[in-house]
Image 1 (cartoon, helix red, strand yellow):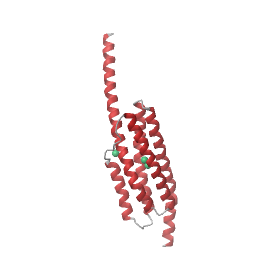
Image 2: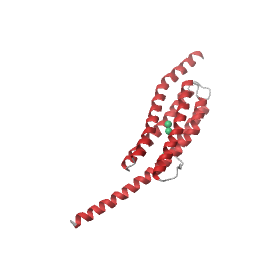
Image 3: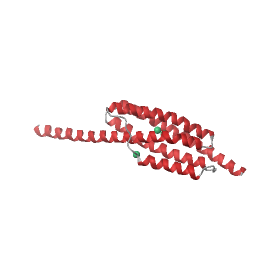
Image 4: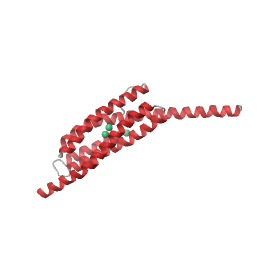
Length: 183
Ligand code: FE
Ligand code: FE
Ligand code: FE
């Protein structure tokens, strides 16, 4: 009996240690995506301005509005944790947006510009989908169902945006073909 009590105490201690690690990781990853979303807010207007297809520009502008809402959701999750809403530099999103900037510069005025913008934007969405899927699952494991719900709402928007971009890829490629014929 004493042995079992000791074992359960050890297990409880181990579980607590694991929970602490996961909640630290959750907080760190929240800071990572908070930085990423704020970076995306600065990037999307440039991409909308660069896009040749009106539909593509509209998709970027629509997602810019959504992204402002996503930052607000993250603010709420930070508040649930009792932590200040603060970002932590994410080299992954910096790298992905740098690639996008490179495409805008090197393909300026070129028929393939929009295809390049689409590819860059989808890389951003896929990064976000990976992060939000993880954060949602961790929130559930940490017993934070309201945070999980907010993270799921954003995940749904990122996935819908990714699908819109996939659909647009076809029409953008068609525009490129038309321009090639006209040239
Ligand atoms: Fe986002
Ligand atoms: Fe990151
Ligand atoms: Fe997004």
